[in-house]
Image 1 (tube, helix red, strand yellow):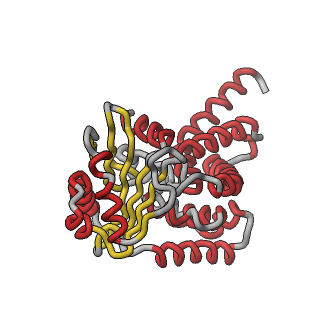
Image 2: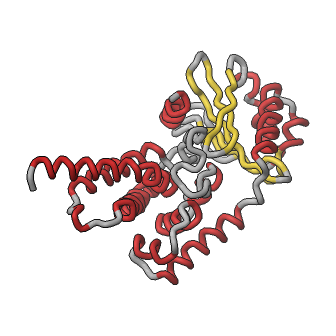
Image 3: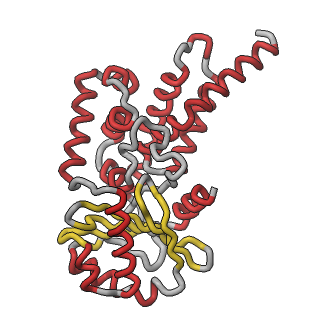
Length: 298
C-alpha cells in the first residue's frame, strides 16, 4: 500500500470510529457503570480498530460494537472482584446527560443510576444482552453473534434481566414529579424536619452512600423510613450549612450537586415511584464527583 493510500485508509478508519464512538461509550458505560472505565474500553477498541485488517470489514460499527461489548464484558468480570472489596456501598459513576439524553443509544434505557445499580447484581453477559437489546435495539440474532451464544440463550439472558429489574423496582414517575420530590426531600433534609422527610419516603426506602472509604460516609445501607429519616435529620446540622445546591441532570434524571467553597462534595440522586422516594443514592467518592463535575461544566 502506498503512503497516500495508507493515509486515506486511516482517515476513513478515524471517521468511522468517530461516528460510532458515542454508541461505543454508551454500551461500555452501561455494562460497567463507570464512565472512567468505559473511556478506557473505547480507547482499547480504537487501538484494535487501527490494527485490524479493515479491508475485509464491511460494517465498521458492527465490528466496533462487537469488540467494545466483549472488552467491556471481560473488564466487568475483573471489576466485579474489585467491587467486592470496595469499602461501603458501590454506586455507578454518574454522568451528565443534558447534552446527550440517550448517551449514544436508540433509547435511554439502562441509563438511570438506580437501574445500573440493579444491573450490577447480574452477571456481565446478562447485562450486555439487556443493554444491547433494550437501549440499542439490536436484533437477538446479532446480539447472539456478539456474545458468541445462541439466539435462544440470548432471549433467556434478556428475559432474566427484565425479570430482575421488574422484581426490584416499582414503576418510575415523570421527570417533573421526580424533580418535585427531590426538591421536597432536600428542603426537609436541610432543616432536619422529620415529619417532612417521612412524608416523601416510602416505608422500605434505602439510603446508599458511596464514599469509597472516605470518613463520615455510612459504610452500610440505611434501611426503612424511620431509620433513614432519623439518619438524614441527625447529620443535617453539620452537613448542610455552607453547602451550595445546584439542580443538575445525572443519567437522564434530576439530581442535586452539592458543593462547598466551589468544590463538589456530593451528588444526590433518587429513585422515585408513585408511592414516594424508594432509594437515596449519595455519591460522595471524590473521584466520581470530579469526573461528573468536569463533564457537567464542559
